[in-house]
Length: 188
Image (cartoon, rainbow, N blue to C red; front, side):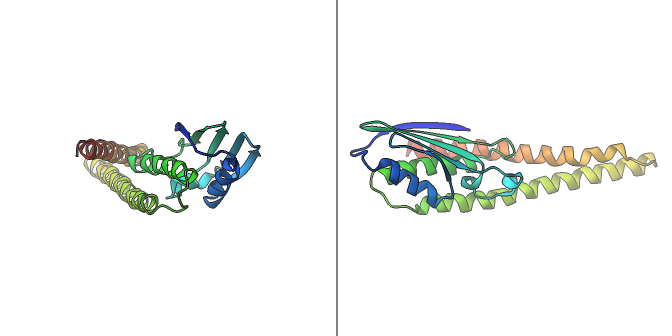
């Protein structure tokens, strides 16, 4: 997932230092730090798929600073992720929180923390759906094996297929539902 934004700031004399302090609080490490360009990275690991906080995933942030504006690019490695609406909401809020912080806000946003907690709950719900899918696949194999009275070793491939199918269906349902909630919120 790649997200870019450009915004004006009143005084860019300390922007590089302020941006570095912000990302350091969230665990990013510095790759390049000059007065006009800041490049930060969150290391990727095999455990990223199990991390409930999307901000801890492997990602890169590039901050380009000019006289009166700042251009920020967030590039998040979502290859091993579920790519849910909740995860996207966390990253969008994180980007907005950074913009507000540079304009004089404080570090630590209660809404961002709530979105991370909601993401954690949603991940458990998605894993529950995947387990239900695995159970349904195992049940179908057992019934088919009883009816045919033979060993269904190849049929055991149905277990991960149904698990992934249930996971994908639950994620797409939640994305549609989340999109409708966003549309309602924009109307009100």
